[in-house]
Amino acid sequence: MKTTPAPIRMASPQASSLREWFTVLSDLAKIKISLLVTFSAAAGYVMSAGQMKIGTLVATAAVFFLSCGSCALNQYQEREIDDLMERTKTRPLPSRKLEPAMGLWIASSLIFSGSAILFYARGLVPLGLGLFAVLWYNGLYTPLKQKTAFAAIPGALVGAIPPILGWVSGGGDILDPRIWGIGLFLFIWQVPHFWLLLLDSSRDYEKAGLPSITKIFSTAQIKRIIFVWLLSTGVSGFSIFSFYPVHLRVVHFFLLLSTFWHIWNSFRFFRPSSPEADLKAVFTKLNIYAVLVLFLLSSDRLLSSSG
Image (tube, rainbow, N blue to C red; front, side):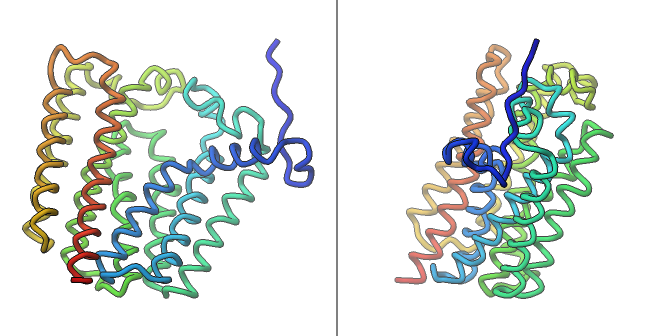
């Protein structure tokens, strides 16, 4: 008979070591995803302000809290579904390491903290962007996943918001086409990011009764669809040069090199002989490519401004 571990309660932290408590909080807030979101916001801030200063830390801290809170709220919303899937059943709420009420309290506290920091330190426009991202992710995308297999496409809009939020926090114009071009790049990147993960976890989705593209298309068809989105991500990476001024030749070179590298990986994924084990490798390399683009663009802005 399966036993469930005792829940961790805020009122009695002695029941668990600090390391276990930190692990639970990290899993609830999806720290890796939240750090990636925070990095994209920091890159947007630097691309706008041209320097690293205290405002960068304030804006990125606010985005980090919002992202952690939104991820925690997502786990609260999907706790029953997570309990049905092998990949997610060990998360804090379905595994009973944390009570649902405590998970909701933590999520609400993080969202409130991030919102308060944005409002008092950066103003209404960044706050509006941050809350829009939370509402879109938790209010639209999360329930939409239970209705349609194509929820990833509207849900991908969430990935475009953090760099725009960072740009506005750094003093940039919200209507500036340069940052909307970066947002478009991240929007396109987000779709194959999700579908690669889905293809790797398709049995879990079907087991949980969630709509899945694996029920609509064959694996070969899904690979072709993902391949098109991967190539589109590369094309949007090339198009950055048409709307965002890159000043340093070395950055030009590495942006082109990283985009060619991404396209080469995309063609390797599309090979008929490509093994299923390559899914995780392509997923990881796709994420590395997005980080490289943001790092290079923000580095170009910093170095060209200081020079």
